[in-house]
Length: 419
Ligand code: PMP
Image 1 (cartoon, rainbow, N blue to C red):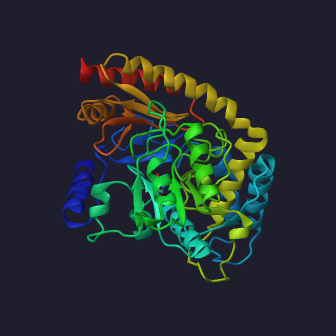
Image 2: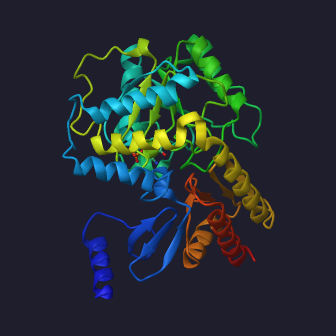
């Protein structure tokens, strides 16, 4: 029967427009940082739903309130109506996240996924400034819908659009940790030279760590320089915190340590905490010029996601509870990755917090390590334009023993590839 079930996936892949990740098994259950396949194997999860499962699978702190909520005859779908679950989420987000950080942001629910949040940010920036041009960065990833794709720096993904994507330009993302000092010359020239033919941008959109683009992590000073330049020229700064946010880098927002206050911030993935679709676009109150209904959608704000999102904030972000735990895990992770990287010439650790990995100069290596890791019971992805970086993203709630076990498997897998 199992064989027959696998064959159905093969048929699906040949007849339906879908693709399965290269992990050739059928998963059945999951708990914490472990996934179980139907053939009885278990896998440690260093993938975490590409960042949607920062608190692990079926976290009981979130599952319990969700089940109670659903059994209480509560509202699941409500569109734009006011609900108790929405109010609780908004209050909690304000009290535990915005207020302690002195952030004055308005919150909107632009749709179910990360790309919806980016689309809303781009639209809002254009409407507020009356300008169309958006500056983005090489190797950036912002989503697959047309607006988000137009600011995504990945040729293969852009080709999916079938036509040239306009009104954007890509700046070198040169502010990563082991990079050269950045002076934003390209942007400065465009802004100061009125004969340059470059339209003054409405906004700059940036990730503090390029989750899909190779785990380059911007230096805090680079982010501050960028924020200052934007501010001087009346250009809105959008931080896409869809992947790096919600605690992944150690603080709730990935830009907190840099001391910048973006004009618009995109959040999704782990904002519901449970893998349920929810996204937020938060922006400075003076940008709130949309009339009611100018940006809407049927699945904006999902009540079960509000319930788990509220529980996640209460359990993990009250008094910044999770921060020191993530810092401890992150130093363990970086230490383990450094030891693995040290065995290969030119290999380097990249990333920040629990969004970290190893860059390999031979671009085939990371993919091979991922395959070997899977064979040994570890799910770990690759990142970067050529998949040249092995990318680890364990849950922020992973047991330290599981983190070490995963690192051991990774070391073993890397050794089997690099010798
Ligand atoms: N922004 C960033 C930084 C992302 O990493 C992603 C998803 N990988 C997106 C936007 C798009 O999110 P979604 O896939 O939920 O539309």
